[in-house]
Length: 452
Ligand code: F6P
Ligand code: MG
Image 1 (cartoon, rainbow, N blue to C red):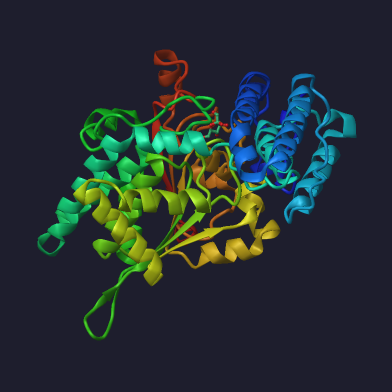
Image 2 (cartoon, rainbow, N blue to C red):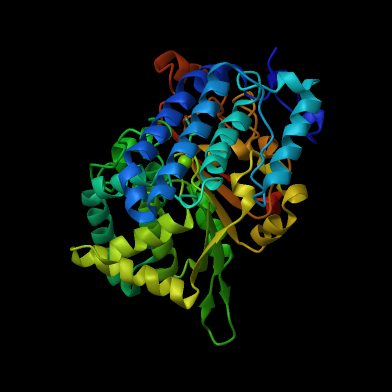
């Protein structure tokens, strides 16, 4: 029997639901080896590049990395036990302790195998093992095996990026004369663009092209019926109530943290939203949170973040390059800042954050609003459990709430809470893949301040 039957570490049984397991079997068996094969192929294709940069040492490192990855693919495909990490990186104790916890939950060491463990855990573990294989092999140890796909997805979305930056310029240019209702309209549009930007991730397509080709603003109306829960108005109210009138009459506003998901077009939508929030005075500071190593194929690392801004600055398009220049100066002035923390690349659900990463939890507590982008963050927010669809988002969070928060997510995994009675059944009969196709989305809000 799968570990899916077990409540997870530290979670009070009354607030527990089964960990997603059965769906995992197919994903682990089919999708993960495809991703691994692509990674192996990418490294092999770059053999000459490694030789040019590092000579024979580069070739030896390429061979050894491929050998470690092939070994892992074999372990995966033959359902071998999940092994402890050995690379000595600073998150290693957290990973190995987590494995021990799993062994405790499942009863014996052997049973913590690729097919018999919770999906969230093995999926995260595979990306960490890829990092281990690369890291153990200098001089190619900082090579990003997913870089090619991420840059390609950015370039393939160029037209959409230009449209978006042109729209942003129009909004920002007239900001002084903008009424509150117009501001709300722009806010709604850019929040939704950032939401739908999450359609463009590469792990759902096992690395195949998934870029944005149409105008993101023009598509919004036709996408509206696919938003299953829309708490945008609460996000707006949170931003407005964080604004304070100073004695001088000047209004200061709050800090928004954006827990980023994918590079490529999605990241641009997040940067555009962040730009609008600052330019409109809805926020005075933005903290971006990214990953500290390549993760889930397309997730943003510090390198992707810098690269995207540089490419935007260098674009041969007036409004796109203007946006890039503005973003760079926000970073320089400290209005924007980029952060990464090892917790974001652990398999832990966010319920564990207060105990396992108290420094990160405390950081998020200083935000006025935290936006969590994407599907994986939603899985971690809700503990990747088979919740009944009508269970409240607050219940599924089980006390995680460092600050008012909102999930902007297109549905790619078998978890969804906070629906109306009957809504899920209707969706299942109309569209059996509604939870995994990326066609539907939610804007789901929770505030610890509204709890009594
Ligand atoms: O569906 C495959 C998958 O890798 C999920 O496991 C994961 O939740 C999702 O894709 C990643 O999506 P996102 O980039 O939106 O977090
Ligand atoms: Mg992602």
